[in-house]
Image 1 (cartoon, helix red, strand yellow):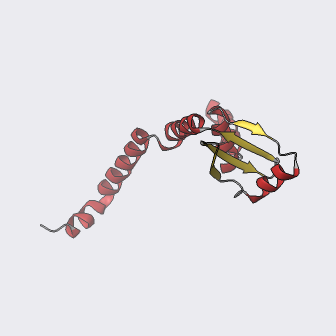
Image 2 (image 1 turned 60 degrees about the horizontal axis):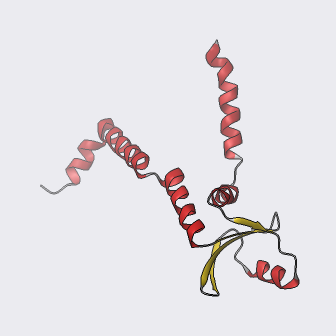
Length: 129
């Protein structure tokens, strides 16, 4: 009986997790990395904001420093960080999304499962002896 009660909770958790869009996830990672939120207010800032590729991280060099920016027109915000913050963002992205240990283990398990489910004889016959 307890398993059936936890099923709705599990479904709700999956749905709520799925509600986070790719852009929202990217913004969360950037904020975690230390990016600042800026609202464009002057005509120059608004024009620059509108010229950026929406939802993608843009890179610009100003006064010898590289700025990394993400424009989100739905919230009318710009997330801005320097090289240190961008490096931290890449570390967060790698740790939370890529994680080679987890990805490698899943790939190996999938390959073993396919091999054990009969594909081994098919794939093995394709390998030159």
